[in-house]
Length: 111
Ligand SMILES: [Zn+2]
Ligand SMILES: [Zn+2]
Image 1 (tube, rainbow, N blue to C red):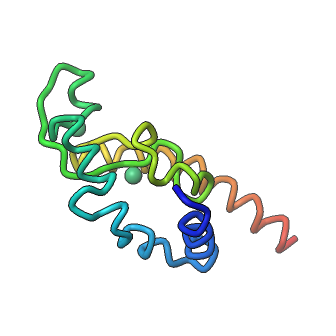
Image 2 (spheres, rainbow, N blue to C red):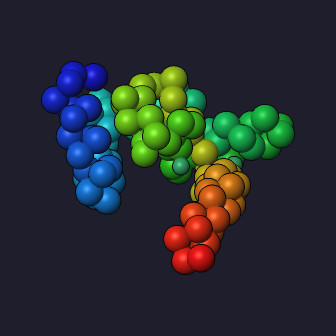
């Protein structure tokens, strides 16, 4: 992606406006990464596929998330198509790891 786009992504993330990143034409446009990923994965949930199940993919997940890897936001190798359930599972796992860190940080601040 070009530097201008990357700068926008970084700024939006910093300002807590990540939703704007997902409004980019390069992401959600007709030929955007989202549709390219769905076509590549044949609209099939990749986590279910690993378990030999078939579920229709409805969401496109970033393996390395936007906040830490904004330069990979529009990288087809960094996205995977998932069903809603698998997508939630992936985020649950990430969030559990993350919230622990936040709690620790709060404690340091408070005490
Ligand atoms: Zn699934
Ligand atoms: Zn996700």
